[in-house]
Image (cartoon, rainbow, N blue to C red; front, top):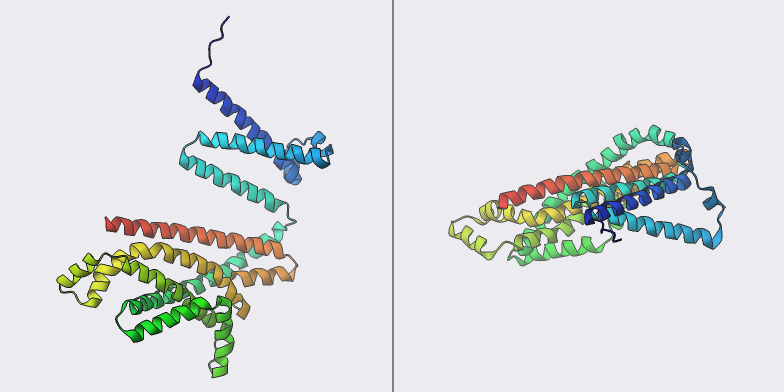
Length: 323
């Protein structure tokens, strides 16, 4: 008696069901052993026979289970649309990160008690310092780029020396030189102005090359057409060149701002109460360093995600304007 072949759709659904069951078992198994406190609260089953294993058999079973779970998970994801895949992968990685952090001896009561101050004092100061620094760096970069593209040897010499010096020195050293060196010349500088000056000068030097490359990316025909219209060099740059160059300048400039947001932690060495300084100071009081550092890391990550969204919106706006 011949057996009729199973339709491909039914085979696919059977494979999907098996893969989903494997992933579900793997999740229950992982949570019941990695996070036993959560498992007891959720009444998740534990595998006593696995707990009794030791040595090589234990490692082999763990490795085999991880491999099978990864294969099943990949099989499930491959059957989904791309956007759904991205969302699920993010959720899975977040769960893995949460499971990893749950193995630490964290005091959530302490985090809840200090998190508000971490935001109001630390995150606010970090955003304040970064916003002012990137604005000044933007102006310095534009001036440096125009100087490098000019025909004046003096301007080119000043711009190249500036970018070479401040790109060649570590940012931490620049902060110390400005904060500790200027008072020897009779100029007392507070911590925040010193940190803002160092960040602005350092990132302005890096962004100078970004602006120069963006301006040079505009085709020569645009320059010739602007001159044919009788525009002055200032009008040509403001009305024709820079609006087009911004499509090239905005993405790396946004990346520089995100990097500056994290590098602003270096100004804590001169006593600025930004996010990292507040986290380390508050953590020292009760010897809860990991709680504060993980909280500060989460705040940095959220701020970076928000800036990435803003950057993508600005890029879309410039792309639409260019069409």
